[in-house]
Amino acid sequence: MNPIFSTTVYDGKKDYDDITLLKSQLEENGITSINDVELTFHIYDADTYETITDSDTIKFSAE
Image (cartoon, rainbow, N blue to C red; front, side, top):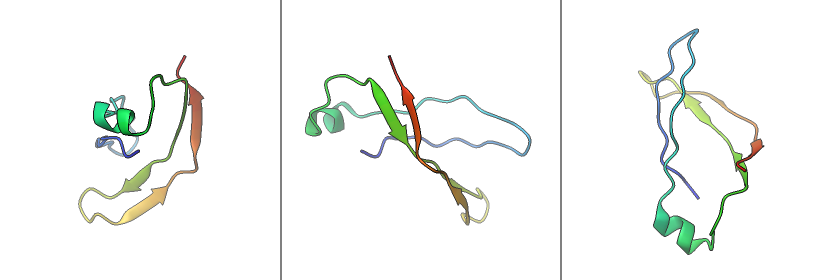
């Protein structure tokens, strides 16, 4: 799935934001509950759109 998530984080700062999962994508993928999450981040420069880095996979429990 490709959830909707975009936020700007300035140098030396951090941000807390929401990730939106579309009900239709959950249904299409047979997902009825979310217990364990795996995700990656594509981080890029907001001015040039050049890639800064792509994160390793981050795993956590949503229970």
